[in-house]
Amino acid sequence: MSTNQGFDTRAVHAGQEPDPLTGAVVPPVYQTSTFIQDGVNVLRNGHEYSRGSNPTRNGFEEQLAALENGERAFAFASGIAAEDALLRAVLRPGDHVVIASDSYGGTNRLLKDILGPWGITHTAVDATDLAAVATVVQPGSTAVLWLETPSNPNLGIADIPGWARLAHDAGALLVVDNTFASPALQRPLDLGADAVAHSTTKYIGGHSDVLGGAVVVGGASFRGKTLAEAVEFQQFAGGAVAGPQDCFLAARGLKTLGLRVRQHSTNALRVAQWLARREDVARGNYPGLPSHPGHGLAKAQMHDGFGGVVSFRLPTGEAAKEFVTATKLFGLSVSLGGVESLICLPTEMTHAPLKGTDREIPADLVRLSVGIEDVQDLIADLDQALAAVSHLTGHKVAA
Image (cartoon, rainbow, N blue to C red; front, side):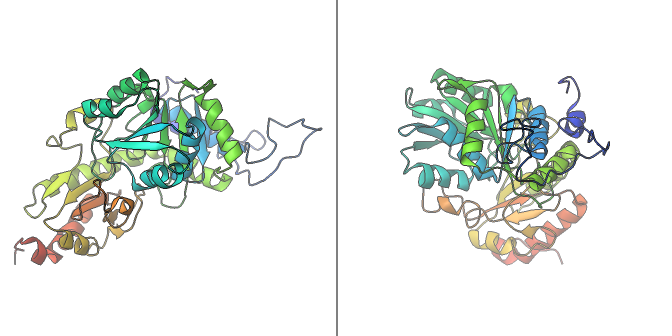
């Protein structure tokens, strides 16, 4: 597909050509494990076994690569499976990783408890402080810089081109987890990143009905191989591939990604503005607010909105814990990015692996995944939940 075509056009058509046999507008789901050969190792269109390739997965990968402006995309069974495959593809025992301190708890667990015993060390650093990042990079040892922006759950904004310069000066790779923004709002490969990671469970799938992950790579080479070659081999050899039905659902989600994320962003901004006016909310985090310290950088790196996630702090951890069970439209759950609104207490849920460390998430911080419902209904739900915990926030509720 032409890269000159618009984002929404590519989302609908890239990798999603009508079925050549029947003309079906939606490509079929190739729910098969293996493929008949026309002779010994004479493959039809390159397909042998679905761990190596499957037309449904290939179509989704082409679609996602087109939206991230990448050379290749690779679909995996979950976001963590995608991260693990990428890191195993490029790291060797003795390597060092620099990771943004405000990153997903599962990524931290992967580095510490899975890759750590394999001989990988890592250092966490404030992603918003490039000078601090520079001090922890170890030229000759640091192989990967791992960045999440906007970050989870504090919604910090980091300078992607700045991180890319530091990585490349040290001979390392920059990986950006683009789950929160999605390619609808931010394309890190255009800003200097070497690879992008996604939990496609979130905004890409978009309907809370599929688990998946993906890696999208540019044209960089590392240790004698292109990233595409390295990740492709790891995908095949490691085998944590996304199944055809999951890829079908993720591809269907991608077709409406731009529309959905624009509505998520519109609603989230309204919610963040409303929270900013509340006396019983200690502090709000949303990069779309001019008061956010990363607002200017977010405007430069993101397009068409600032995402659907809002986090904020209540006066106490007790208030936060009661608040997340008092909402009615916002369902208490981990995950995010679906059309429905969700609420989470990160310190006890998504980021529990960080408890007891210097990176522990504050007990009073609440994360919202703002859905596409009518925003006035979402605000009314938050209002009644804040009223329900007013005895813990010291806020007087009007009679």
